[in-house]
Length: 283
Image (tube, rainbow, N blue to C red):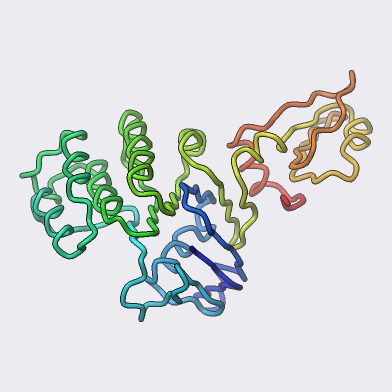
């Protein structure tokens, strides 16, 4: 459905995306994680056809993506998206008129659910509600690929929970590929099927959450014991304090012994080790 081959994007001499090859061939909700300036927004804009890449190819449903493509089949909303200063219900109506497959009923249901005043103009909404309206318009588009760039910015905790429910309901209604870029890692874990980690313009990880749950561990103990237990395994990070060492693995768990502390990594800790330490790349 989405295929990137050796994609590079440069701004002057700086490469923001570096030779990325990635294939997403199943519908699902995917989470795109990365630090600030890791290349998340550039990647999403390139897949949406909002900007051209420097080299390589991007295809969506077999169609090559560029700024010249008339219909990419992709709906993209970036953070702080702007709309005309029109009433919310008018914006939803216009979106339905320009897109024959637009799910207007779903958009109205979501407007009622979030207690949005349809007569209120977009530019008079709070940041959180502006983002919610943009997300509703994007999800109701019924496009094959939905790209949401930091959609929970400006949301309070209750709105974030509602957003994740909205995301799951939208997918159940129209199964497709939805990629969500976010910094709030643990909250979205219950909603997504697969995780993509990008760091310094390169894809560091692309796999299921189950893979993280079953293969990501910390191993702590005396340096000699930890090194012996983790020899030959995929070490993604290491901390050392005095003679005690903790190694972080993405591999099978080493055999438990009395001298070792072995614990599964949380999704957030796994992400930190993947992008914050030098170590082996996850396979």
